[in-house]
Amino acid sequence: MPGGDDGSDLDLELEYRPFSLALETPLETADGTIESRDGFLVRLTAADGQVGYGEATPLPGWTESPADCETALARAGEAIQEGPTAALEAVDEQVAARHAVSLALADLQAGREATPLYRYVGKGPMVGRVPVNATIGDGPPAETAHAAREAVDRGFDTCKLKAGRRSVDDDIDRVRRVREAVGDDVELRVDANEAWTYEEATTALVAFADLDVAVVEQPLPAGALEGHADLRADERGDGVSIALDEGLLEHGVDAICEAEAADALVLKPMALGGIDVARKIAAWVQELEITPIVTTTIDGVVARTGAVHLAASIPDVPACGLATGDLLADDLGRDPVLLERGAAVVPQAKGLGVEGVWDT
Image (cartoon, rainbow, N blue to C red; front, side, top):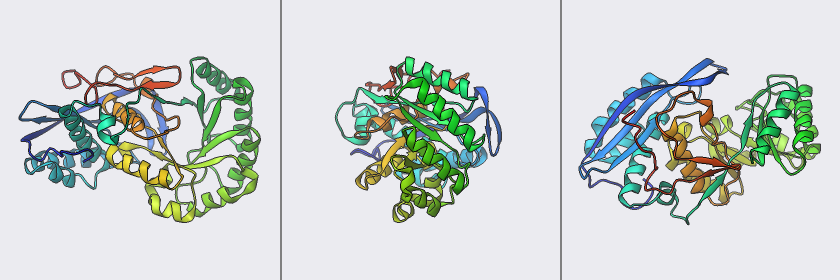
């Protein structure tokens, strides 16, 4: 556990209950259509009355199944009588379940220390805001440009464009239209979602370098580690950073660094096993001059708020993918994180700062 006291001296009770949060728009994935985000809300209660909340929201292709997640949480509920370490060991192989248990423990401990979660996790200075990017869907060129312009008018200075469902030439045209719409001062990123061949990715990077695209995320399939390294070494794409998302989960930091395959890594706490794990990776890769970018897996308010605290704990964090609450038609409770002019306002209450979720 981050921080000092790990809670081993407390008599703890772990409870969990299922939830289902409808999406505003169904999400098409390689594993099928997702119409809701289903998971488990975790509550950890100490004998002194202190409470901590966690969230396990499994996602096909990224984490364990919902059934395996629930089984792991049940094990943690029994193991918690032996202490926090035993509870975490009980969910060590199920990343979404571990995310929930570790977040609840951190929330509880930060509450006991009367400090915001990001300061408990990172032991750093107070942080008021963290930059966030606008995510622009994979629509036609005019629609994409209009959405990007609207995002900039709302205060976002970083836009991430989804790509890969159309031809590379069409995606280049979409990015060109967006650049024309938003001007030169807005950072553009493109998320290809593993869609391109090496030749297609090369074509895109050459064009994107001329359009001043800052980052291309996962241009090749996750397994193509050497391919990503070769893209980074190709001088024709100079100025465009390569970020790995799915590739991080498949290969790990050591292999990525050895291959020199990434300039940035996308950290999804739910898929990595918790904000504590993600925070350690962020500190590690920053020492290696690799940029950490925090995003969510379209989670409920407990996990989203945890991701905001994670981002706030990382020094010099770039714009992160945290503005995802509006993708949900329902939520677990009131969102304590305000989005203002392209930034997330970090909660300064003790712990997570999420209230009333168990009562809804």
